[in-house]
Length: 156
Image (tube, rainbow, N blue to C red; front, side, top):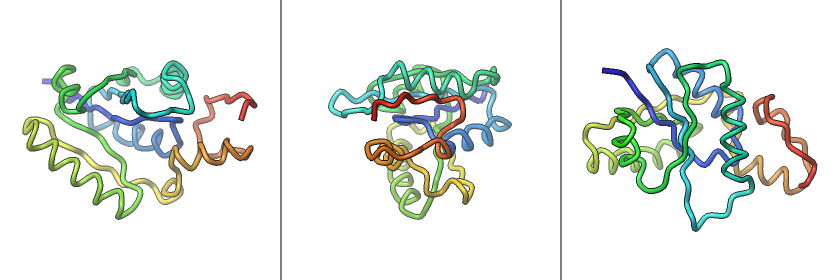
C-alpha cells in the first residue's frame, strides 16, 4: 500500500517555508498531493490557476508530487484520493495548538487518516502567505520569501 500524504493549504502564495516542508517530507511518502483548498467565501490575492502553476513549477522535477485543488473537508478529500496522511508544517506554539485541534477533529471524523507535523526550519519560521501578501500590497520585495520559480508581475 502506498504512503500518500495530502499537504493542504491556500498557498496564496506558496512560500519557501511550504517548499521546505514538502522537500523534507519527500523521503517519508510515496506521493505527496499539494492540495489547494478552495473556499468560495474567501477572497484570494492570486487565482487558483496561478497558485497551481507556481506550485507545479516549484516542484517540476519531483515525480512524487501532484498538485490539485479541492472543496470541503480535507479528510473527505484524503479518502477520495486514498491518502492516509495529512502533512502540516509548524512554525510556532500557536501553530501547534491550532493544528493539534484540527488533527484531533480530523481523527474523530476519519480515524484512518493521521496528521504528520514537521517543525519549520528556524530561517522560515516567520514566513507566512498572509505576511507575503501584506508586503506585496505595500509594494515590498518578497523575492526572498517565495520560491525562485515564482515570477510576480508588478501589479501590486
